[in-house]
Image (cartoon, rainbow, N blue to C red; front, top):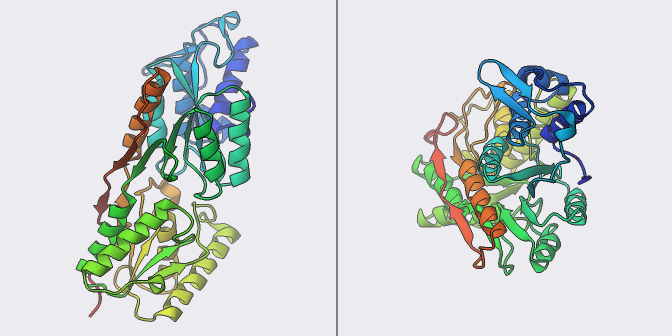
Length: 382
């Protein structure tokens, strides 16, 4: 099935399945380990483990603790993907290795796999055109169940509405598209924005800026975080308006953060954006960022400029993303945690309900978030 760019783990599944069908791996033969597959395919161990788990769920291999993975079927017994399964497609704007995506995917695959439902994962690379291409390819292949984490509020609008009108089994994550009535599962972004701002205010900060690379008009996700930010300011007697919002050329992922020339360019851009923020208001003592990647971007830029975090500048992110050893921060980030594992669990259960003929009453499910204070926020300097 050609549905655009394959996910990393799907490439491993397809390759290993083809090798078993061709007899390169015989019945009962041991396969490479998770670590060996990670090295062979240049992926993380999470991805190679996921591939082996999917092959095991399909009965193509079996796994023995402490011993490894072994071919469970003869080549003639292996049927093409989807022949014995219902397929659900997950379309998201980032790789399964990015941030908390692994938590989302783990929940989905654990629950769907137990119901003989196969999850395929497709990365739109935060590109509207790629997202449309993937969806149309899926529809062309007869896929009737889609979980989508949309790229954009407006760029994805026509796509979401079309899927709704086609009566596809549809679940939308992260954003909502009023007045389209469908199944939405997302975090309480409004309360998250409120909690982060109130935290900074209680620390004595009055000159706080919300930093984004999009703004109120681009996504309900960011809009709701900004409105929660505004509410906290208002309740604490601090006036608010567009002057409180800094729209910068900031990242949506961690590309450019690992050494070399790219890293220096990335860091120089962060310094430039930070200088512009202080040029607009030299009294700024705290930054509330739309997500963790923006917060990391500005924290590293601040420290490289000799601006102490949190001594001179407090910084708060959003998402509580998993960071591997390449991205360890000098100052651990205060952030707002989303429960993507719970979102995945609810999405899996809802799609199974839709597959069984339920779900006549679409719902918008909003999950609570939690402020996690770490080292990047502290009382304002007096």
